[in-house]
Image 1 (cartoon, each protein chain N blue to C red):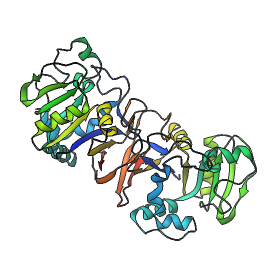
Image 2: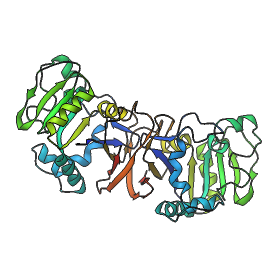
Image 3: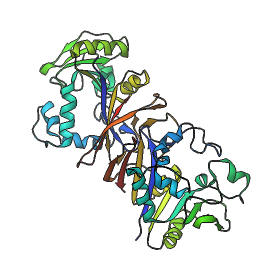
Image 4: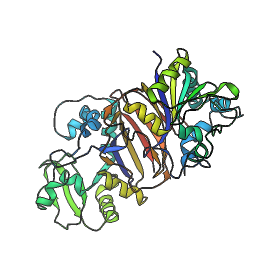
Length: 212
Length: 212
């Protein structure tokens, strides 16, 4: 069966976003520092239809992950880019614009039922009001044998971990402290994982792959 | 000038000890999992005058750190092995017994003035009631050109970081979640560090060295 995987940038003090997240500042205060390595990766620019970046080990890791994945799951916070947009207009397209960087089926965890929303570039948003297991089942069917990626936010990844449904977690550990913000692992509880791979990047980030 | 360094085992969710620490269980619930890699290292057994362990990359890293260090600083919680012993009898020797594994001058941060306490094997405890800078100054003088090690607990290391006095931090990242316990970095606040080295150990731990 295809694996459920997550890969997320995290600070040394355990934050995956800074404080005061909003639709205008979805990464929170200082949160962009967690993602600097990614913005320098050519494979990230390819997904986002922009120019630039290097073919670094960071870029290769991102491309590998992308290659394995056939469908994406996200929380409604990640879909709407923070708190604001969704609440203001539930018919609105997500924070990611008309041509989102996913290029595959995306399943959005939400409490609002809503028709699927096809976007440009291969992304179709399907809204799943009946829980994380339903979203995973639908995503697995859509992934056509490939893996499923729970993209975020922290709460969505933590929910899948707490339910024992996540197979693999990659932490991109950035050499910064944020001091406050959104933590990964809230409510997950004690457990052991198996570390399967470490990649030391010249960008300063340390990628640690764990089997759950 | 000699560097102030810290090296501490930490869980994926940012805890350096489990919940419910006490003199009977100074590592807290589940906390021993953070240190398993160390208990398998021959250099750890050498310091503790016990037999066993392997000459692994973990052991080599511990031996390297030990070689650099001429004096140790610790909080009174680490000295007393949790909350109990110190409060019950301030004249008591520390939790570490009559032949402590430090084999060098140890400066204990405390609010109680008290005469120095020489132990077996080269450890002498000096009690410092007048703050972290005084402890560092005394430790530097005692270290005789070698580095100074702030051994713990979390609060002592975080205080030196917050004051901008720590030069190097090694995190031994264990592949476990503890779910609760004592966090490193409380009160330290936002900052960038420079990652200088990563060691992937077959034991499952990932050593990340950071310049502060």
